Length: 396
Ligand code: GCU
Image (tube, rainbow, N blue to C red; front, side, top):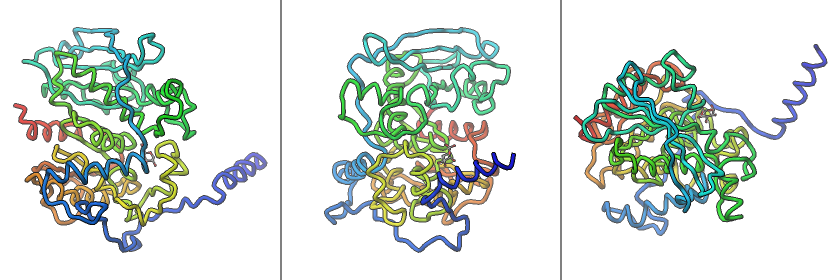
């Protein structure tokens, strides 16, 4: 036994040898910093109008995140097509319809991933739709009798609110595993075979790509309203939600729940997880170009990533116990994205300091809330996001 313990200790010290995985949870140790100005172009000129933002500054920030953080997000492949692979007209006591759709990448159907859709049986025209990636398996999410992920997906409530929900499993698009290169069996490997060396992209870009293909499908389904797609992502998929919303303006609302480092948390605060730590534990989430940066001196901070959603409604959320995600840094991101929303005459946060547990500040186009509790995406969170989407998209 002792020998086994010794071997484990030896191995883990070898693995972490030379890698600084230390982190800070002490607010008084947050370094002094100045956030890079979102409205200053690389040339030094200042953006003063929404048009200039869209034409000049937004592309600069998008390019930075493409080249230096998450990598390319390829366009829709030519042979992409959809197949309905199942339909159940009576789910949740007759409240909803369940549809299963296969997104096939190529004519030969060598590569595909499945989307699980629930929508209310009674709906007027097409339904607004929550678009999401899940952490487990679509099949875990179809049964009414309490499957693993069920507590996270309050289907009855969503359907009663008149919303549809489309979800796919992240691992079915791109496995969430090292290595950083494209040698896995996900969509990156598929592209690599067809276009060798053309794309450099992370798993987060691959998931963003998958969400855009789900949007491609939604555009073809007459039961779903593609002009009201509400993207909801949690944690690593909350980072992905911001990146997807940046690349694909078809998503009308972006919700980033507890996204932390690489998501909404301000990098310069170096509170909780940092890019330095993420590169060691999850190197496949970012491209190698990123390795040259220090957390203290990224040329653009994470409010830059969030600003790419503007002028569309954006919701950022934290929870009190989730220090790893740096709740204060996430609030700051929502707050400091405002100069960009101001260009469009859109209101954001009213609060002047990070919220206390149980508080919300979400009556504007940018919303933020702090749930009491742990790192999670719970039914009560979905309820708030639906309410926010309804108000912002004028859904009755
Ligand atoms: C880890 C990781 C986070 C990530 C989270 C998750 O905690 O460090 O960056 O957000 O996993 O996705 O659950």
